[in-house]
Amino acid sequence: MGRERNLHSLAAELESRLCMVEQRERECAEFATALEERDQHHWAKVKSFQRSKALFEAGLAASKKTVRAELQHSRYTEDSLTEYLDDVPGTDGLLLARGCDLGLKTRCMEHVLLLQRDECAARVNLLAAEIEERGSLLCSFFRASTTHLNRLLAEQQERERQLHRAEDLLCLQQVDLAGRMRKAMDLQQDSYAHAEMQRKVLALQCRRVVRSVGDVVGSLSGIDVEAVMLELESRIQGILRVPSSDASNEYGMHKAAGES
Image (cartoon, rainbow, N blue to C red; front, side):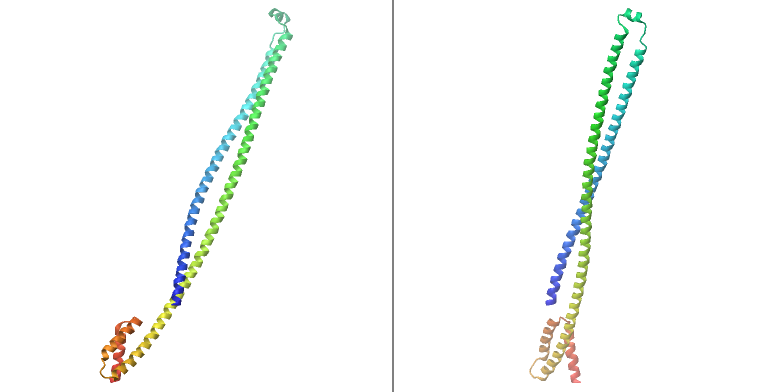
């Protein structure tokens, strides 16, 4: 009885551990699914970051081209004004006939040239400031994106480490469970073997008792030997749980040997 109680308690403990292992397996599967979804989301953010980076780089390149075009335009305007001044007729008589002198014409053209130079310089400064601002925004965006990606990578690595630890723990629990199950099976087999041995010993003892009772009942008069033996056989069968032919055959063989 003590062995059976131990076996039942051990079986209950094994069943509880098996349920816990199955729960851990489900948790690991759910964790793996969540990790895969997080990984896909992470790569989607990486691709979005790469597209944004390409757009920023394209805008920066366009701004540089615009600055170069503005510089070329300012140089071309300056050269054109210089050539225009050079092409002005130099005869004082013609200038006087038109009502202006060469000094006034030169001062007017220099004033126009200075205004255009100031305008070109202002445009260049504005474009340079715009390029610097875009570059600063791009650098800030890259730094923030790099920090975010590094954080996501660290979280993913931590989740992978947790998953590996959970898998290792699950493997250890499975090994422990397999060892306990083997031990329980060995104990159960030992218990069955011990019970079978006790049953055989008890059967031998009952056969001896049947022979002794048969001898005693056979020597008495006025007693229904057959009824007594049937009652005894029924009780022995209830104890041993063996077929009914064993005890009766045992008594019949013993009686035949005594008569001979």
